[in-house]
Amino acid sequence: MGLSLKGARWSGMIDKPNLEVEIAGIKLKNPVMTASGTFGYGEEFSPFIDLDRLGAMVLKGITLKPKMGNPPPRIIETPSGMLNAIGLQNVGVEVLIKEKLPYLKKFNTPVIINISGDTIEEYVELARRLGEVSKKMGVAGLEVNISCPNVKKGGMVWGTDAKATYKIMSSIRKATTLPLIVKLTPNVTDIKIIAQAAEEAGADALSLINTLVGMAVDIDSRRPKLANVSGGLSGPAVKPVALWLVWQVFQTVKIPIIGIGGIIKIEDALEFIIAGARATEIGTANFVNPKVTVEIIEGIEKYLIEKNIKDINKLVGSMKI
Ligand SMILES: Cc1cc2nc3c(=O)[nH]c(=O)nc-3n(C[C@H](O)[C@H](O)[C@H](O)COP(=O)(O)O)c2cc1C
View 1: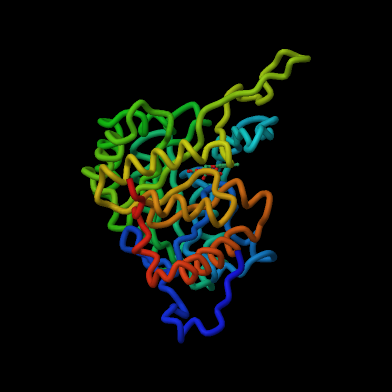
View 2 (view 1 turned 90 degrees about the vertical axis):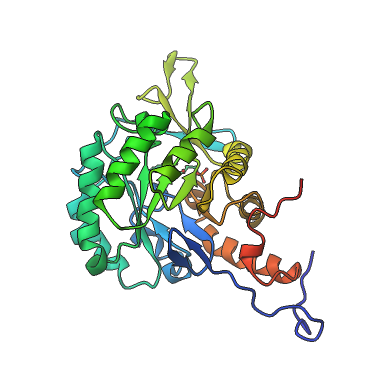
């Protein structure tokens, strides 16, 4: 369907719709963010896209100390997606602060740090440390990963039990005034209860979903294809699950939701927004097309013009039932 903007002004159509949204008190120039673990520390993507175009950058999950992650093989392709068992390999918070954040500071795009730990104390210490340097190093907020399926300790332990979610989030809340986004797992019986616990504990926003636990088997060796046996499923295969969970959580909490899971094209992002997400994160698609985030931003703007919607916020949760 072609879209002619000629004469838009005269026909009552709008020239430039508002794409700005607010998540956890952070102003984003558009609702398109990167998903943790699929965008490195940002620099890797600057040959492909102007990082200034993004709504926000969420960096690879960080822990207090550097982590080697799981042994290989730790990534395999699956129909319409992939399984990963990286196991939170990362440089550790001090290297992040000294070597990665200075590069990102020159961009006018909020940087959100995804944090993980084995214990509550580790999360709290990370939040405290990042709060301490936030102004100087340009940390806009934290995304608390309580949903990683690929680590032996911590990870999903906090995100699969409402009491544990409340406990960890209220401890982190006390340790920092930085905006807190809680990243939820789909691997639960009722995500609404977990979402509520996070909101009650003082979360400013929720992001969902992290990956779905899965596995694959090599029929010749009869071994699991991943050395870790299980991994996290992501990509287009998970989108319907993610959309359903976003829609459920949207009806449960008041805080903003960031929709994640299988977004590879403009229409996918729009589906999430209509189902209740105020912003979106793009993950696996970055591996296939490193320019996908910017293409989706441009596509959302075109859609708003075509539908004569002046403000993206009007679209959020506008699903008709
Ligand atoms: C290789 C890989 C690494 C990931 N690492 C992290 C991570 O460090 N922290 C986190 O919260 N999520 C991590 N995720 C989950 C993604 O951020 C996202 O929630 C998930 O992949 C679903 O989105 P997608 O289908 O668009 O990829 C990772 C995903 C992949 C594929």
